Image 1: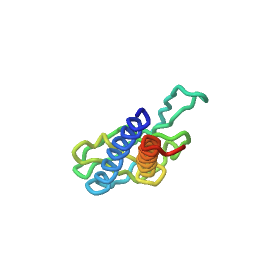
Image 2: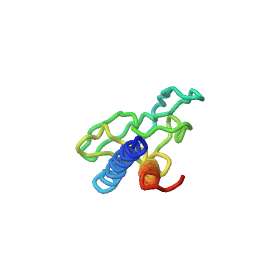
Image 3: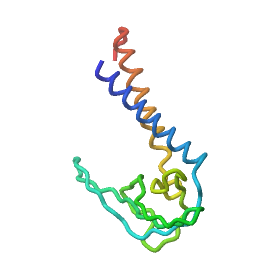
Image 4: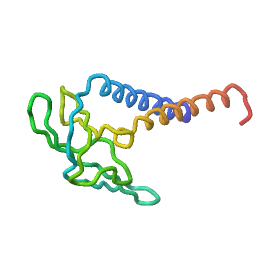
Length: 133
């Protein structure tokens, strides 16, 4: 039962991520921007890893200057400070902005999380229904 619940959490979380990614693709505004800094965040884990979040500056289509940190972080630097990058932002909340590249958006991550959740649910149902695993 625990695997089913964990799988369900993964499916819901991944589904929300997919929905947000698609919504930003559909309604987001695309503008040029500049990386002005990098913010590293440490997280606990076996390797004590760090995640880099680029800090962006860009001008919205209605003329507002915005500085914000990306929501998607990577363990590697995808753009150096001073580098020009394509930006996609939410026009309702321009502080929600990402570098509009494959590495900058990580659209594959929610898909993997959703698939892992489905796999956990299927495995738990198989075990529960008398399958030998």
